[in-house]
Amino acid sequence: MKIVESKLRASICRDSFFEFLKFMWDTVIAEEPVFNWHIEHLCNDMQAAAERVFLGLPKEGDRVYNVPPGTSKSTIASVMFPPWTWTRMPSARHICGSYSYPLA
Image (cartoon, rainbow, N blue to C red; front, top):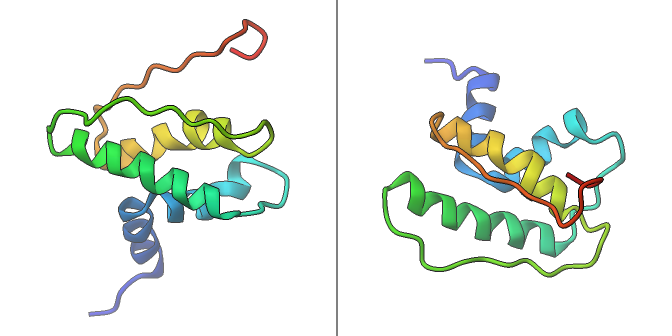
């Protein structure tokens, strides 16, 4: 049986939020990405929390990510994370917020 490249890519992206982020980056953001270590760490931590939701398990605690401005945290958490979760759980809902009206 021949594996279709698009199906393989879809499977990899469903299984890994970081791989999804890397593959979809240029679809959402025009600038060339710089994938520093913190981005993979953030993706893996967010995926770990989401995996508990997918399994119907209670959350382990709240997460707060304190990283400097311009390090892609908003793109990762507010733009890329919801679509990735929908690849695994189409009924997932997200609540996003901002500290100021212009950013929201």
